[in-house]
Amino acid sequence: MEKQKSWFGRNWVWAVPGCGCLGIILFVVFGAGIAFFGIKNFMSNASPYDYAVEQATNSPQIIKILGDPVTSNGEMNGNVSAQNENGNAEFTVPLKGSKGYGILVVSAIRVEGEWFYEDLYVTIKDSQEQINLPIPD
Image (cartoon, rainbow, N blue to C red; front, top):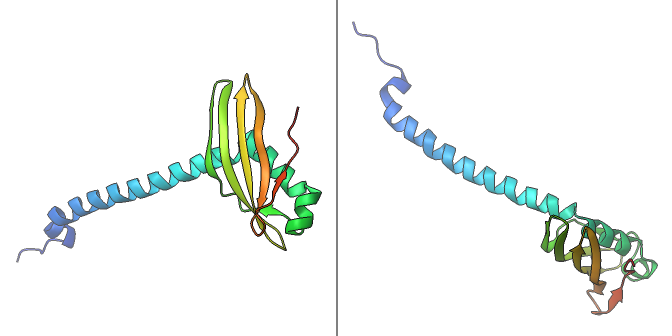
């Protein structure tokens, strides 16, 4: 009596290509996810982001209008690019307080390793009022 082959032995022709396709799909999905979060992490850790969010969340005027505490969910919209000692940053960050919402707007250039801010303000969502934040000298 002949011993029956295992499932894999009978179906390897179908199983191997299926695993290959699944592997490629998973690689693409996870690769895209890693790239997205890597870029987001780079942008969130950039000096203009840190400085701008700190200024906005600690501003007495912003706290008075949006409510305490003012927080950011960390989601940026825009870009930060730096090459060697030069670069630029243009992005917005949503802000939330106990009384309302706002958008932090940042525009900066990097020259010889130092960031210079062209725009740094918060637009209050309800009134569209723009509140300027301190720009370092």
